[in-house]
Structure formats: C-alpha cells, structure tokens
Length: 107
Image 1 (cartoon, rainbow, N blue to C red):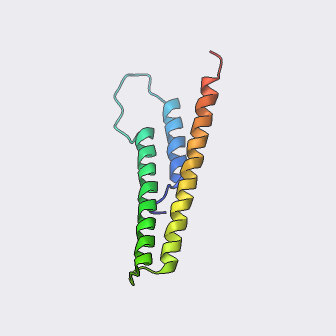
Image 2 (cartoon, one colour):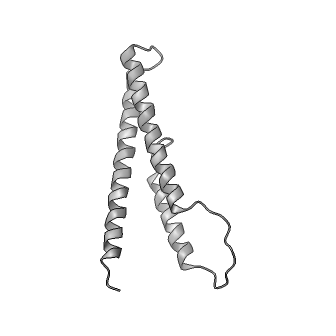
Image 3 (spheres, rainbow, N blue to C red):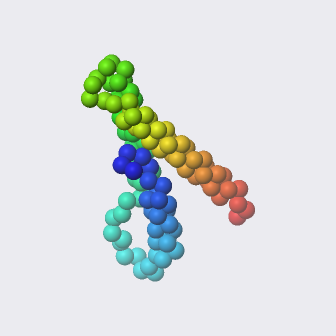
C-alpha cells in the first residue's frame, strides 16, 4: 500500500516500541535517534490525507473529461482512500480506548 496506512507496519512499530521499552539498558547511555510513535502517527495521517487528496483530484479530473484518467483508476483510488481513512479511524478509536483504560487504572 503506497498511499495508505500500512496496518502491519504500524503494528510492527508498536510492538518494536513495546519491546524497546521493556529492554531499556540500566546505564544512562543515549539511544540512537529513532522514529517516535508521534512521528509514525503523523506520517500515517499525512499518508491518508495524501491518498484522499489524490483520489479527489483524480475524480475531479474525470468529471472534467480528462482523457488521461480512467474510471477504474479513480474508483480504485477512492476505495484506497476510504479504506485508509477507516483504518486510521479505527486506530484512533483504539488509542482513545487504551488511553481511557490507563487513566481509569487505580494508582
């Protein structure tokens, strides 16, 4: 998937971050800079936005009668944009649910 959220990539990144959090070295050595969760989330949101923009631009070009844009390509781009947006919404819902669960934990 070039323009949408790669669910497997996001899940792998979350698992890698969880393993990294569990294996912190006892010394205070600085770790090499890595892409943080916030950066990963932002890049995923940007990818969804780009997919939607591309799909809507293709649809507008088709409506204008542009011969370089075919209906099947537009339909596929619109479906990819829709699926990536649904995936992003589901991830957001799960993150909010996890946040609420952590906030409701007794101290």
